[in-house]
Length: 246
Image (cartoon, rainbow, N blue to C red; front, side):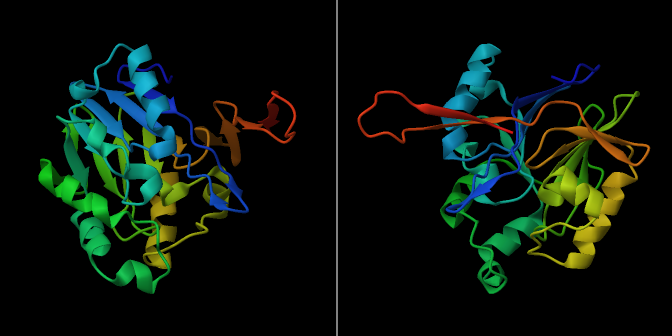
């Protein structure tokens, strides 16, 4: 948890990893407590029970979430929106238009669960305008590139700012390089978005990595990046093999 006047609580930590079967898709899921209760991204189905349990640990009913901000409409960031019955949705209209078009398939973006869009449209929908203040000192930042309508949040707590940036910067490697690996929008936009985030001099909560700061040209993690891999590799044993990464 990042302890500030506005409480920013990373419920599930993102992980920068993939397998021979594809990306793990474990994104940061972040709860912001200002004058409203805001959830930035909801993860995918593998996160579902863990996410519910994190709310139970904090004795926060799911229906108390006022606002869900969707960084973009890839499956690993949005599949659990149906858990939050009373929440409004903040999303860039450009992202919705992109998801409903044929453009994703043209650029090789097969990560959008289009069956989910009717659920989004049924909820109270707010277009993510630049610098829209969605709660006290919590602002929308447009950070297109990874997808055409990717958005971030800037929390101005009067001390050090916090930028929750989704896949505009998936991990610290992309931050250092200044160029993301996967771009389904425009590469120029993606590079400009990273530059825009760097200029904030903020604590960065990326899409798929531990949160970090950038000081004296060095990335400093504020939390350890870690994941346990639990597998059964011996057919005649009841034991599970556990590997901690890294």
